[in-house]
Length: 398
Length: 231
Image (cartoon, rainbow over all chains, first blue to last red; front, side, top):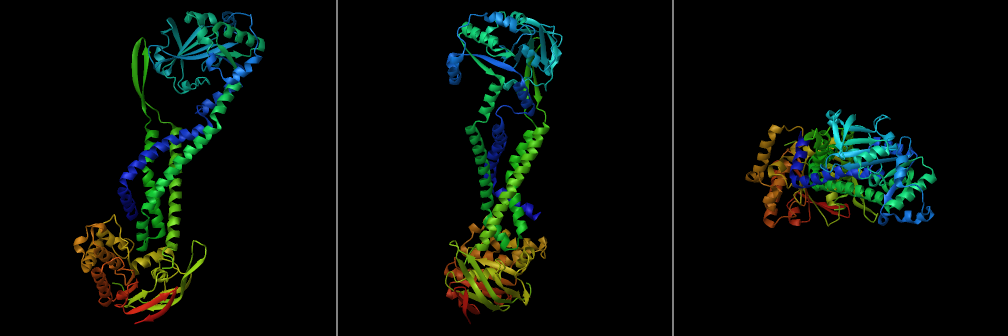
Protein backbone atom coordinates (compact mmCIF):
# COMPACT_ATOMS: atom_id res chain seq x y z
CA UNK A 1 0.00 0.00 0.00
CA UNK A 2 2.85 2.32 0.96
CA UNK A 3 4.53 1.49 -2.35
CA UNK A 4 1.40 2.09 -4.43
CA UNK A 5 0.77 5.38 -2.64
CA UNK A 6 4.30 6.56 -3.37
CA UNK A 7 4.06 5.52 -7.04
CA UNK A 8 0.72 7.29 -7.47
CA UNK A 9 2.22 10.35 -5.81
CA UNK A 10 5.20 10.24 -8.20
CA UNK A 11 2.86 9.98 -11.20
CA UNK A 12 0.65 12.77 -9.88
CA UNK A 13 3.62 15.10 -9.70
CA UNK A 14 4.56 14.21 -13.32
CA UNK A 15 1.04 14.80 -14.62
CA UNK A 16 1.84 17.22 -17.45
CA UNK A 17 4.74 15.17 -18.76
CA UNK A 18 2.64 12.06 -18.33
CA UNK A 19 -0.10 13.53 -20.54
CA UNK A 20 2.39 14.59 -23.25
CA UNK A 21 4.21 11.26 -23.10
CA UNK A 22 0.96 9.28 -23.22
CA UNK A 23 -0.13 10.95 -26.46
CA UNK A 24 3.29 10.39 -28.04
CA UNK A 25 3.59 6.81 -26.78
CA UNK A 26 0.08 5.96 -28.05
CA UNK A 27 1.01 7.31 -31.47
CA UNK A 28 4.31 5.44 -31.47
CA UNK A 29 2.73 2.18 -30.34
CA UNK A 30 0.02 2.51 -32.97
CA UNK A 31 2.56 3.26 -35.69
CA UNK A 32 5.14 0.62 -34.80
CA UNK A 33 3.25 -2.44 -36.11
CA UNK A 34 2.83 -0.62 -39.43
CA UNK A 35 6.50 0.33 -39.60
CA UNK A 36 7.71 -3.10 -38.60
CA UNK A 37 5.12 -4.74 -40.87
CA UNK A 38 6.60 -2.74 -43.73
CA UNK A 39 9.87 -4.61 -43.28
CA UNK A 40 8.37 -7.83 -44.54
CA UNK A 41 5.57 -6.62 -46.74
CA UNK A 42 4.13 -3.28 -47.69
CA UNK A 43 0.75 -4.40 -48.87
CA UNK A 44 0.41 -8.11 -48.25
CA UNK A 45 -0.77 -7.82 -44.69
CA UNK A 46 -2.47 -11.02 -43.81
CA UNK A 47 -1.32 -14.59 -44.06
CA UNK A 48 -4.35 -15.40 -46.20
CA UNK A 49 -3.27 -12.73 -48.65
CA UNK A 50 0.22 -14.09 -48.68
CA UNK A 51 -1.15 -17.50 -49.61
CA UNK A 52 -3.14 -15.94 -52.43
CA UNK A 53 -0.04 -14.07 -53.51
CA UNK A 54 1.83 -17.36 -53.76
CA UNK A 55 -1.07 -18.89 -55.67
CA UNK A 56 -0.86 -16.05 -58.18
CA UNK A 57 2.85 -16.63 -58.61
CA UNK A 58 2.25 -20.32 -59.25
CA UNK A 59 -0.18 -19.74 -62.09
CA UNK A 60 1.41 -19.61 -65.50
CA UNK A 61 0.05 -16.35 -66.80
CA UNK A 62 1.41 -13.28 -68.48
CA UNK A 63 0.36 -9.76 -67.67
CA UNK A 64 -0.09 -7.39 -70.61
CA UNK A 65 -0.65 -3.77 -69.69
CA UNK A 66 -1.29 -0.98 -72.12
CA UNK A 67 0.85 1.92 -70.93
CA UNK A 68 1.00 5.47 -72.15
CA UNK A 69 4.37 6.03 -73.77
CA UNK A 70 5.27 8.66 -71.19
CA UNK A 71 4.84 6.17 -68.35
CA UNK A 72 6.82 3.30 -69.88
CA UNK A 73 9.68 2.27 -67.58
CA UNK A 74 13.17 2.79 -69.02
CA UNK A 75 13.97 -0.86 -68.54
CA UNK A 76 10.98 -1.78 -70.70
CA UNK A 77 12.02 0.72 -73.39
CA UNK A 78 15.52 -0.71 -73.37
CA UNK A 79 14.16 -4.17 -74.00
CA UNK A 80 11.80 -3.04 -76.73
CA UNK A 81 14.48 -3.47 -79.38
CA UNK A 82 13.82 -7.19 -79.29
CA UNK A 83 10.12 -6.78 -79.85
CA UNK A 84 8.52 -8.01 -83.05
CA UNK A 85 8.09 -5.41 -85.77
CA UNK A 86 4.76 -4.22 -87.17
CA UNK A 87 2.55 -7.22 -87.45
CA UNK A 88 -0.30 -7.48 -89.82
CA UNK A 89 -2.19 -10.22 -87.99
CA UNK A 90 -5.71 -10.19 -86.57
CA UNK A 91 -7.40 -7.19 -85.12
CA UNK A 92 -7.75 -6.73 -81.37
CA UNK A 93 -11.46 -7.45 -81.64
CA UNK A 94 -10.77 -10.78 -83.32
CA UNK A 95 -8.14 -11.69 -80.76
CA UNK A 96 -10.50 -10.81 -77.92
CA UNK A 97 -13.37 -12.72 -79.48
CA UNK A 98 -11.26 -15.87 -79.55
CA UNK A 99 -9.30 -15.23 -76.36
CA UNK A 100 -12.32 -14.47 -74.20
CA UNK A 101 -14.38 -17.37 -75.56
CA UNK A 102 -14.89 -20.47 -73.41
CA UNK A 103 -11.61 -22.34 -73.49
CA UNK A 104 -9.78 -19.18 -74.68
CA UNK A 105 -6.46 -17.99 -73.26
CA UNK A 106 -7.29 -14.41 -72.17
CA UNK A 107 -8.56 -13.16 -68.86
CA UNK A 108 -9.14 -9.83 -67.24
CA UNK A 109 -9.87 -8.54 -63.77
CA UNK A 110 -10.97 -5.02 -63.06
CA UNK A 111 -12.47 -3.03 -60.25
CA UNK A 112 -14.57 0.06 -60.77
CA UNK A 113 -16.37 2.47 -58.59
CA UNK A 114 -20.06 3.01 -59.15
CA UNK A 115 -20.34 6.38 -60.91
CA UNK A 116 -23.30 7.26 -58.65
CA UNK A 117 -21.77 6.28 -55.33
CA UNK A 118 -18.21 6.32 -54.19
CA UNK A 119 -18.94 3.54 -51.72
CA UNK A 120 -20.07 0.69 -53.93
CA UNK A 121 -17.65 -1.04 -56.27
CA UNK A 122 -18.02 -3.29 -59.28
CA UNK A 123 -15.55 -6.10 -59.54
CA UNK A 124 -15.29 -7.80 -62.92
CA UNK A 125 -13.85 -11.22 -63.57
CA UNK A 126 -13.68 -11.76 -67.31
CA UNK A 127 -12.72 -14.73 -69.53
CA UNK A 128 -10.24 -17.19 -68.05
CA UNK A 129 -9.91 -15.09 -64.90
CA UNK A 130 -13.36 -16.33 -63.87
CA UNK A 131 -11.63 -19.62 -63.01
CA UNK A 132 -9.72 -17.77 -60.27
CA UNK A 133 -12.92 -16.43 -58.70
CA UNK A 134 -13.62 -17.15 -55.02
CA UNK A 135 -16.95 -18.81 -56.00
CA UNK A 136 -17.88 -21.60 -58.39
CA UNK A 137 -19.28 -19.95 -61.50
CA UNK A 138 -21.44 -22.28 -63.62
CA UNK A 139 -19.88 -22.99 -67.04
CA UNK A 140 -23.01 -22.40 -69.04
CA UNK A 141 -24.13 -18.94 -67.89
CA UNK A 142 -23.12 -15.80 -69.76
CA UNK A 143 -23.27 -13.58 -66.68
CA UNK A 144 -23.02 -14.55 -63.08
CA UNK A 145 -23.66 -11.76 -60.61
CA UNK A 146 -22.83 -12.00 -56.93
CA UNK A 147 -23.28 -9.64 -54.02
CA UNK A 148 -21.56 -9.59 -50.66
CA UNK A 149 -23.24 -10.91 -47.52
CA UNK A 150 -24.54 -7.47 -46.54
CA UNK A 151 -26.63 -7.39 -49.70
CA UNK A 152 -27.72 -11.04 -49.67
CA UNK A 153 -31.33 -9.82 -49.95
CA UNK A 154 -30.65 -8.88 -53.56
CA UNK A 155 -30.25 -12.51 -54.67
CA UNK A 156 -32.95 -13.37 -57.20
CA UNK A 157 -33.46 -9.70 -58.07
CA UNK A 158 -32.02 -7.75 -60.95
CA UNK A 159 -29.39 -5.05 -60.72
CA UNK A 160 -28.18 -2.57 -63.27
CA UNK A 161 -24.67 -3.02 -64.62
CA UNK A 162 -23.65 -0.40 -67.17
CA UNK A 163 -27.31 -0.03 -68.07
CA UNK A 164 -27.98 -3.75 -68.52
CA UNK A 165 -30.39 -5.44 -66.07
CA UNK A 166 -28.75 -8.60 -64.77
CA UNK A 167 -29.99 -11.20 -62.28
CA UNK A 168 -28.14 -11.58 -58.98
CA UNK A 169 -27.37 -15.27 -58.56
CA UNK A 170 -25.05 -15.74 -55.60
CA UNK A 171 -23.33 -14.37 -52.51
CA UNK A 172 -19.61 -13.86 -51.99
CA UNK A 173 -18.74 -14.71 -48.38
CA UNK A 174 -17.23 -11.83 -46.43
CA UNK A 175 -14.11 -13.85 -45.76
CA UNK A 176 -13.65 -14.75 -49.44
CA UNK A 177 -10.22 -13.88 -50.75
CA UNK A 178 -10.38 -11.63 -53.77
CA UNK A 179 -6.83 -10.42 -53.56
CA UNK A 180 -5.37 -9.31 -56.82
CA UNK A 181 -1.76 -8.17 -57.07
CA UNK A 182 -2.63 -5.23 -59.29
CA UNK A 183 -5.41 -4.04 -56.97
CA UNK A 184 -4.31 -5.00 -53.44
CA UNK A 185 -6.46 -2.29 -51.88
CA UNK A 186 -9.64 -4.18 -52.72
CA UNK A 187 -8.70 -7.24 -50.73
CA UNK A 188 -9.24 -5.32 -47.52
CA UNK A 189 -12.37 -3.50 -48.58
CA UNK A 190 -14.88 -5.10 -50.88
CA UNK A 191 -17.98 -4.94 -48.70
CA UNK A 192 -21.01 -3.83 -50.67
CA UNK A 193 -19.34 -4.55 -54.03
CA UNK A 194 -21.12 -6.20 -56.93
CA UNK A 195 -19.17 -9.04 -58.51
CA UNK A 196 -19.72 -9.58 -62.23
CA UNK A 197 -18.40 -12.76 -63.86
CA UNK A 198 -18.43 -12.77 -67.67
CA UNK A 199 -16.99 -15.67 -69.60
CA UNK A 200 -17.02 -14.55 -73.26
CA UNK A 201 -16.40 -11.52 -75.36
CA UNK A 202 -19.90 -11.28 -76.83
CA UNK A 203 -21.44 -11.12 -73.35
CA UNK A 204 -18.85 -8.58 -72.29
CA UNK A 205 -19.69 -6.49 -75.34
CA UNK A 206 -23.39 -6.58 -74.54
CA UNK A 207 -22.68 -4.95 -71.19
CA UNK A 208 -19.95 -2.59 -72.41
CA UNK A 209 -21.76 -1.78 -75.64
CA UNK A 210 -19.58 1.27 -76.23
CA UNK A 211 -16.59 -1.01 -76.60
CA UNK A 212 -14.75 -3.02 -73.99
CA UNK A 213 -11.32 -2.35 -75.50
CA UNK A 214 -10.29 0.30 -73.00
CA UNK A 215 -11.64 -1.82 -70.21
CA UNK A 216 -9.77 -4.98 -71.09
CA UNK A 217 -6.50 -3.74 -72.45
CA UNK A 218 -5.55 -1.97 -69.24
CA UNK A 219 -4.79 -5.24 -67.60
CA UNK A 220 -4.92 -8.36 -69.70
CA UNK A 221 -3.87 -11.75 -68.50
CA UNK A 222 -2.80 -14.34 -70.99
CA UNK A 223 -2.99 -17.90 -69.71
CA UNK A 224 -0.54 -20.30 -71.30
CA UNK A 225 -0.21 -18.28 -74.51
CA UNK A 226 2.73 -19.11 -76.75
CA UNK A 227 5.17 -16.47 -78.03
CA UNK A 228 3.43 -16.09 -81.36
CA UNK A 229 0.03 -15.43 -79.80
CA UNK A 230 1.59 -12.97 -77.42
CA UNK A 231 3.39 -11.13 -80.21
CA UNK A 232 0.12 -10.89 -82.10
CA UNK A 233 -1.63 -9.45 -79.05
CA UNK A 234 1.15 -6.94 -78.34
CA UNK A 235 1.21 -5.78 -81.95
CA UNK A 236 -2.56 -5.40 -82.04
CA UNK A 237 -2.62 -3.36 -78.82
CA UNK A 238 0.16 -1.06 -79.99
CA UNK A 239 -1.31 -0.67 -83.45
CA UNK A 240 -4.91 -0.03 -82.41
CA UNK A 241 -4.55 1.85 -79.15
CA UNK A 242 -1.25 3.68 -79.68
CA UNK A 243 -0.11 2.47 -76.28
CA UNK A 244 2.99 0.59 -75.34
CA UNK A 245 2.10 -3.02 -74.47
CA UNK A 246 4.13 -3.83 -71.39
CA UNK A 247 4.55 -7.59 -71.00
CA UNK A 248 5.53 -9.27 -67.78
CA UNK A 249 5.17 -12.80 -66.50
CA UNK A 250 3.23 -12.93 -63.25
CA UNK A 251 6.35 -14.14 -61.54
CA UNK A 252 8.29 -11.12 -62.78
CA UNK A 253 5.49 -8.79 -61.76
CA UNK A 254 5.17 -10.19 -58.26
CA UNK A 255 8.94 -10.40 -57.96
CA UNK A 256 9.19 -6.70 -58.81
CA UNK A 257 6.58 -5.94 -56.16
CA UNK A 258 8.45 -8.01 -53.60
CA UNK A 259 11.70 -6.29 -54.47
CA UNK A 260 10.06 -2.96 -54.01
CA UNK A 261 8.75 -4.03 -50.62
CA UNK A 262 12.17 -5.20 -49.59
CA UNK A 263 13.82 -2.16 -50.98
CA UNK A 264 16.99 -1.67 -49.01
CA UNK A 265 16.52 2.03 -48.40
CA UNK A 266 12.97 1.51 -47.26
CA UNK A 267 14.09 -1.21 -44.94
CA UNK A 268 16.81 0.98 -43.43
CA UNK A 269 14.28 3.75 -43.02
CA UNK A 270 11.77 1.42 -41.36
CA UNK A 271 14.38 0.00 -39.00
CA UNK A 272 15.75 3.49 -38.30
CA UNK A 273 12.30 4.94 -37.66
CA UNK A 274 11.30 2.07 -35.38
CA UNK A 275 14.63 2.25 -33.51
CA UNK A 276 14.38 6.03 -33.15
CA UNK A 277 10.83 5.83 -31.80
CA UNK A 278 11.71 3.05 -29.36
CA UNK A 279 14.85 4.95 -28.27
CA UNK A 280 12.78 8.10 -27.76
CA UNK A 281 10.35 6.17 -25.57
CA UNK A 282 13.21 4.61 -23.61
CA UNK A 283 14.89 7.98 -23.07
CA UNK A 284 11.66 9.52 -21.89
CA UNK A 285 10.97 6.74 -19.39
CA UNK A 286 14.60 6.88 -18.29
CA UNK A 287 14.40 10.66 -17.85
CA UNK A 288 11.21 10.33 -15.82
CA UNK A 289 12.80 7.77 -13.50
CA UNK A 290 16.00 9.80 -13.16
CA UNK A 291 14.01 12.83 -12.13
CA UNK A 292 13.07 11.02 -8.93
CA UNK A 293 16.51 9.64 -8.25
CA UNK A 294 17.41 12.18 -5.48
CA UNK A 295 14.14 11.32 -3.78
CA UNK A 296 14.84 7.58 -4.02
CA UNK A 297 18.28 8.25 -2.43
CA UNK A 298 16.68 10.07 0.50
CA UNK A 299 14.21 7.22 1.02
CA UNK A 300 17.10 4.76 0.86
CA UNK A 301 19.02 6.82 3.43
CA UNK A 302 16.14 6.56 5.87
CA UNK A 303 15.61 2.84 5.50
CA UNK A 304 13.98 1.93 2.16
CA UNK A 305 15.38 -1.45 1.08
CA UNK A 306 16.76 -1.92 -2.45
CA UNK A 307 13.90 -4.17 -3.70
CA UNK A 308 11.43 -1.51 -2.55
CA UNK A 309 13.26 1.21 -4.50
CA UNK A 310 13.45 -1.00 -7.60
CA UNK A 311 9.74 -1.84 -7.33
CA UNK A 312 8.95 1.85 -7.03
CA UNK A 313 11.02 2.67 -10.13
CA UNK A 314 9.50 -0.18 -12.16
CA UNK A 315 5.90 0.55 -11.12
CA UNK A 316 6.42 4.21 -11.87
CA UNK A 317 7.75 3.31 -15.33
CA UNK A 318 4.78 1.01 -15.95
CA UNK A 319 2.37 3.63 -14.65
CA UNK A 320 3.98 6.09 -17.02
CA UNK A 321 3.15 3.78 -19.94
CA UNK A 322 -0.25 2.72 -18.62
CA UNK A 323 -2.34 5.27 -20.59
CA UNK A 324 -0.69 4.18 -23.85
CA UNK A 325 -1.27 0.49 -22.99
CA UNK A 326 -4.91 1.23 -22.11
CA UNK A 327 -5.30 3.01 -25.44
CA UNK A 328 -3.96 -0.06 -27.27
CA UNK A 329 -6.42 -2.31 -25.41
CA UNK A 330 -9.26 0.09 -26.11
CA UNK A 331 -8.59 -0.01 -29.86
CA UNK A 332 -8.29 -3.81 -29.72
CA UNK A 333 -11.47 -4.41 -27.72
CA UNK A 334 -13.60 -1.66 -29.23
CA UNK A 335 -12.74 -1.55 -32.93
CA UNK A 336 -13.87 1.56 -34.77
CA UNK A 337 -17.41 1.68 -36.08
CA UNK A 338 -17.93 2.29 -39.79
CA UNK A 339 -20.89 2.89 -42.08
CA UNK A 340 -21.82 0.84 -45.12
CA UNK A 341 -23.92 2.34 -47.86
CA UNK A 342 -25.46 0.20 -50.58
CA UNK A 343 -28.41 0.14 -52.92
CA UNK A 344 -31.16 -2.35 -52.18
CA UNK A 345 -33.85 -2.41 -54.88
CA UNK A 346 -32.80 1.05 -55.92
CA UNK A 347 -33.04 2.42 -52.39
CA UNK A 348 -29.99 3.79 -50.68
CA UNK A 349 -29.44 2.09 -47.36
CA UNK A 350 -26.82 3.18 -44.85
CA UNK A 351 -25.99 0.99 -41.90
CA UNK A 352 -23.63 1.61 -39.03
CA UNK A 353 -21.64 -1.41 -38.04
CA UNK A 354 -19.28 -1.92 -35.17
CA UNK A 355 -15.98 -3.48 -36.05
CA UNK A 356 -15.55 -7.01 -34.80
CA UNK A 357 -12.94 -7.89 -32.19
CA UNK A 358 -10.10 -9.71 -33.84
CA UNK A 359 -8.41 -12.43 -31.82
CA UNK A 360 -5.19 -11.71 -33.69
CA UNK A 361 -5.52 -8.04 -32.69
CA UNK A 362 -6.07 -8.96 -29.03
CA UNK A 363 -3.10 -11.31 -29.23
CA UNK A 364 -0.93 -8.59 -30.73
CA UNK A 365 -2.02 -6.17 -27.99
CA UNK A 366 -1.21 -8.74 -25.30
CA UNK A 367 2.19 -9.24 -26.90
CA UNK A 368 2.74 -5.47 -27.07
CA UNK A 369 1.77 -5.16 -23.38
CA UNK A 370 4.27 -7.89 -22.49
CA UNK A 371 7.00 -6.25 -24.53
CA UNK A 372 6.35 -2.83 -22.98
CA UNK A 373 6.50 -4.41 -19.51
CA UNK A 374 9.83 -6.06 -20.29
CA UNK A 375 11.05 -2.81 -21.89
CA UNK A 376 10.14 -0.76 -18.77
CA UNK A 377 11.59 -3.36 -16.39
CA UNK A 378 14.85 -3.33 -18.36
CA UNK A 379 15.06 0.47 -18.20
CA UNK A 380 14.20 0.44 -14.48
CA UNK A 381 16.84 -2.19 -13.80
CA UNK A 382 19.42 -0.19 -15.73
CA UNK A 383 18.56 3.01 -13.84
CA UNK A 384 18.53 1.14 -10.54
CA UNK A 385 21.99 -0.38 -11.14
CA UNK A 386 23.31 2.97 -12.37
CA UNK A 387 22.06 4.84 -9.31
CA UNK A 388 23.39 2.14 -6.96
CA UNK A 389 26.79 2.28 -8.59
CA UNK A 390 26.66 6.08 -8.38
CA UNK A 391 25.78 6.12 -4.69
CA UNK A 392 28.47 3.54 -3.87
CA UNK A 393 31.03 5.71 -5.63
CA UNK A 394 29.59 9.02 -4.50
CA UNK A 395 31.27 11.54 -2.25
CA UNK A 396 34.54 9.85 -2.98
CA UNK A 397 37.33 10.69 -0.65
CA UNK A 398 35.55 13.48 1.20
CA UNK B 1 14.28 7.29 22.55
CA UNK B 2 16.16 4.00 22.13
CA UNK B 3 18.98 3.06 24.55
CA UNK B 4 22.28 4.94 24.47
CA UNK B 5 24.64 3.60 21.85
CA UNK B 6 28.40 3.65 21.44
CA UNK B 7 30.34 2.91 18.29
CA UNK B 8 33.66 1.12 17.97
CA UNK B 9 35.54 1.10 14.68
CA UNK B 10 38.49 -1.23 14.04
CA UNK B 11 40.83 -1.17 11.05
CA UNK B 12 38.30 0.51 8.76
CA UNK B 13 39.45 1.12 5.16
CA UNK B 14 37.78 2.19 1.94
CA UNK B 15 39.25 2.69 -1.55
CA UNK B 16 37.74 4.11 -4.73
CA UNK B 17 38.71 3.70 -8.31
CA UNK B 18 39.14 7.18 -9.75
CA UNK B 19 38.18 8.06 -13.37
CA UNK B 20 41.85 7.73 -14.35
CA UNK B 21 41.65 4.15 -13.05
CA UNK B 22 44.02 4.87 -10.19
CA UNK B 23 42.98 3.70 -6.73
CA UNK B 24 42.21 6.39 -4.15
CA UNK B 25 42.49 5.17 -0.57
CA UNK B 26 39.86 7.41 1.02
CA UNK B 27 40.02 5.92 4.52
CA UNK B 28 42.97 3.92 5.78
CA UNK B 29 42.95 1.59 8.76
CA UNK B 30 40.89 3.86 11.03
CA UNK B 31 40.55 2.92 14.71
CA UNK B 32 37.96 4.94 16.60
CA UNK B 33 35.62 4.73 19.55
CA UNK B 34 32.62 7.01 20.00
CA UNK B 35 31.08 6.75 23.42
CA UNK B 36 27.35 6.80 24.08
CA UNK B 37 25.99 10.31 24.66
CA UNK B 38 29.09 11.97 23.28
CA UNK B 39 29.21 14.70 20.62
CA UNK B 40 32.21 14.30 18.33
CA UNK B 41 33.47 16.49 15.50
CA UNK B 42 35.48 15.06 12.62
CA UNK B 43 37.50 17.77 10.92
CA UNK B 44 40.03 17.87 8.12
CA UNK B 45 40.69 19.33 4.68
CA UNK B 46 38.65 18.39 1.62
CA UNK B 47 39.40 14.88 0.41
CA UNK B 48 40.65 13.76 3.82
CA UNK B 49 38.03 10.98 4.05
CA UNK B 50 35.73 12.46 6.73
CA UNK B 51 32.48 12.01 4.81
CA UNK B 52 33.50 8.53 3.67
CA UNK B 53 34.12 7.60 7.30
CA UNK B 54 30.77 9.08 8.35
CA UNK B 55 28.95 7.20 5.54
CA UNK B 56 30.60 3.95 6.62
CA UNK B 57 29.60 4.58 10.26
CA UNK B 58 26.01 5.13 9.06
CA UNK B 59 26.05 1.95 6.94
CA UNK B 60 25.45 3.95 3.77
CA UNK B 61 28.57 2.57 2.12
CA UNK B 62 30.30 -0.72 2.77
CA UNK B 63 33.92 -0.70 4.01
CA UNK B 64 36.55 -2.71 2.15
CA UNK B 65 37.98 -4.01 5.40
CA UNK B 66 37.65 -3.56 9.14
CA UNK B 67 34.62 -3.69 11.39
CA UNK B 68 32.03 -1.42 12.99
CA UNK B 69 30.50 -2.44 16.28
CA UNK B 70 27.60 -0.87 18.12
CA UNK B 71 27.51 -1.70 21.81
CA UNK B 72 29.84 -4.62 21.08
CA UNK B 73 27.70 -6.04 18.28
CA UNK B 74 29.07 -6.02 14.75
CA UNK B 75 26.79 -4.04 12.44
CA UNK B 76 28.71 -3.91 9.16
CA UNK B 77 28.13 -6.58 6.51
CA UNK B 78 24.43 -7.06 7.33
CA UNK B 79 22.10 -8.07 4.48
CA UNK B 80 20.37 -5.11 2.83
CA UNK B 81 16.92 -5.57 4.43
CA UNK B 82 18.34 -5.94 7.92
CA UNK B 83 20.75 -3.07 7.38
CA UNK B 84 17.86 -0.81 6.26
CA UNK B 85 15.78 -1.63 9.34
CA UNK B 86 18.81 -1.07 11.53
CA UNK B 87 19.57 2.28 9.90
CA UNK B 88 16.01 3.46 10.21
CA UNK B 89 15.88 2.56 13.92
CA UNK B 90 19.30 3.75 14.99
CA UNK B 91 20.68 6.49 12.75
CA UNK B 92 19.40 9.93 11.97
CA UNK B 93 21.16 11.75 9.15
CA UNK B 94 21.58 15.50 8.77
CA UNK B 95 23.10 16.73 5.50
CA UNK B 96 24.58 20.04 4.41
CA UNK B 97 22.02 20.32 1.55
CA UNK B 98 19.23 19.27 3.99
CA UNK B 99 18.21 16.28 1.75
CA UNK B 100 14.52 17.16 2.06
CA UNK B 101 11.88 15.99 -0.41
CA UNK B 102 11.05 19.19 -2.27
CA UNK B 103 7.69 17.99 -3.53
CA UNK B 104 6.44 16.96 -0.09
CA UNK B 105 5.33 18.95 2.93
CA UNK B 106 7.51 19.37 6.00
CA UNK B 107 5.18 16.92 7.77
CA UNK B 108 5.80 14.23 5.13
CA UNK B 109 9.53 14.88 5.26
CA UNK B 110 9.72 14.42 9.02
CA UNK B 111 7.49 11.33 8.84
CA UNK B 112 9.75 9.64 6.25
CA UNK B 113 11.95 7.39 8.48
CA UNK B 114 8.86 6.05 10.26
CA UNK B 115 7.55 4.62 6.95
CA UNK B 116 10.39 2.10 7.04
CA UNK B 117 10.36 1.46 10.79
CA UNK B 118 8.03 -1.41 11.54
CA UNK B 119 8.11 -0.81 15.30
CA UNK B 120 6.20 2.44 14.89
CA UNK B 121 2.47 2.17 14.13
CA UNK B 122 0.96 4.55 11.54
CA UNK B 123 -1.37 5.88 14.25
CA UNK B 124 1.70 7.26 16.05
CA UNK B 125 3.03 9.16 13.05
CA UNK B 126 1.14 12.37 13.65
CA UNK B 127 1.95 12.71 17.34
CA UNK B 128 5.61 11.85 16.82
CA UNK B 129 5.99 14.34 13.96
CA UNK B 130 4.30 17.06 15.99
CA UNK B 131 6.46 16.30 19.04
CA UNK B 132 9.70 16.46 17.02
CA UNK B 133 8.58 19.62 15.19
CA UNK B 134 7.65 21.36 18.46
CA UNK B 135 11.00 20.46 19.92
CA UNK B 136 12.74 22.02 16.91
CA UNK B 137 10.42 25.05 16.84
CA UNK B 138 8.84 24.39 13.46
CA UNK B 139 5.43 23.06 14.54
CA UNK B 140 3.68 25.86 12.65
CA UNK B 141 5.53 25.01 9.42
CA UNK B 142 4.37 21.43 9.01
CA UNK B 143 2.06 22.12 6.05
CA UNK B 144 4.64 24.10 4.13
CA UNK B 145 6.98 22.87 1.44
CA UNK B 146 10.76 22.98 2.13
CA UNK B 147 11.13 25.70 -0.51
CA UNK B 148 8.89 27.94 1.62
CA UNK B 149 11.24 27.71 4.62
CA UNK B 150 14.46 29.57 5.44
CA UNK B 151 17.77 27.68 5.47
CA UNK B 152 17.75 27.41 9.26
CA UNK B 153 14.17 26.13 9.30
CA UNK B 154 15.00 23.56 6.65
CA UNK B 155 17.92 22.27 8.68
CA UNK B 156 15.68 22.11 11.77
CA UNK B 157 13.18 20.06 9.73
CA UNK B 158 16.05 17.76 8.74
CA UNK B 159 17.06 17.40 12.42
CA UNK B 160 13.44 16.69 13.37
CA UNK B 161 13.46 13.91 10.78
CA UNK B 162 16.71 12.59 12.28
CA UNK B 163 15.16 12.17 15.73
CA UNK B 164 11.53 11.31 14.97
CA UNK B 165 12.02 7.54 15.30
CA UNK B 166 13.93 8.01 18.53
CA UNK B 167 17.23 7.27 16.76
CA UNK B 168 19.99 7.23 19.40
CA UNK B 169 22.72 8.33 17.00
CA UNK B 170 22.80 11.41 14.77
CA UNK B 171 25.28 11.56 11.92
CA UNK B 172 25.61 15.09 10.59
CA UNK B 173 27.61 15.91 7.45
CA UNK B 174 28.42 19.65 7.44
CA UNK B 175 25.10 20.50 9.14
CA UNK B 176 25.95 24.19 9.34
CA UNK B 177 27.72 24.47 5.98
CA UNK B 178 24.80 26.22 4.23
CA UNK B 179 23.75 28.45 7.12
CA UNK B 180 24.52 31.96 8.29
CA UNK B 181 26.13 32.57 11.68
CA UNK B 182 22.84 33.01 13.53
CA UNK B 183 21.30 29.82 12.16
CA UNK B 184 24.59 27.98 12.61
CA UNK B 185 24.38 28.73 16.34
CA UNK B 186 20.73 27.71 16.53
CA UNK B 187 21.42 24.37 14.81
CA UNK B 188 24.50 23.73 16.89
CA UNK B 189 22.57 24.49 20.09
CA UNK B 190 19.90 22.02 19.02
CA UNK B 191 22.45 19.28 18.36
CA UNK B 192 24.12 19.94 21.72
CA UNK B 193 20.73 19.87 23.40
CA UNK B 194 19.92 16.50 21.80
CA UNK B 195 23.22 15.20 23.11
CA UNK B 196 23.18 16.71 26.60
CA UNK B 197 19.50 16.35 27.47
CA UNK B 198 18.48 13.24 25.48
CA UNK B 199 21.79 11.42 25.67
CA UNK B 200 21.95 10.96 21.89
CA UNK B 201 25.32 10.29 20.35
CA UNK B 202 26.16 12.89 17.71
CA UNK B 203 28.93 12.73 15.09
CA UNK B 204 29.49 15.91 13.11
CA UNK B 205 31.70 16.26 10.04
CA UNK B 206 32.69 19.90 9.64
CA UNK B 207 35.20 22.35 8.27
CA UNK B 208 34.11 25.00 10.75
CA UNK B 209 36.35 25.04 13.81
CA UNK B 210 33.89 27.20 15.74
CA UNK B 211 31.42 24.32 15.42
CA UNK B 212 34.03 21.67 16.18
CA UNK B 213 35.22 23.50 19.31
CA UNK B 214 31.78 23.23 20.91
CA UNK B 215 31.95 19.40 20.68
CA UNK B 216 33.24 17.01 23.36
CA UNK B 217 36.02 15.75 21.10
CA UNK B 218 37.64 16.72 17.83
CA UNK B 219 39.03 14.04 15.53
CA UNK B 220 41.43 15.37 12.92
CA UNK B 221 41.76 13.49 9.63
CA UNK B 222 44.22 13.86 6.77
CA UNK B 223 44.71 11.63 3.73
CA UNK B 224 42.28 9.05 5.09
CA UNK B 225 44.05 8.64 8.39
CA UNK B 226 43.14 9.93 11.87
CA UNK B 227 45.97 12.21 12.87
CA UNK B 228 44.88 12.89 16.37
CA UNK B 229 41.89 13.06 18.62
CA UNK B 230 41.74 15.93 21.08
CA UNK B 231 39.43 17.19 23.74
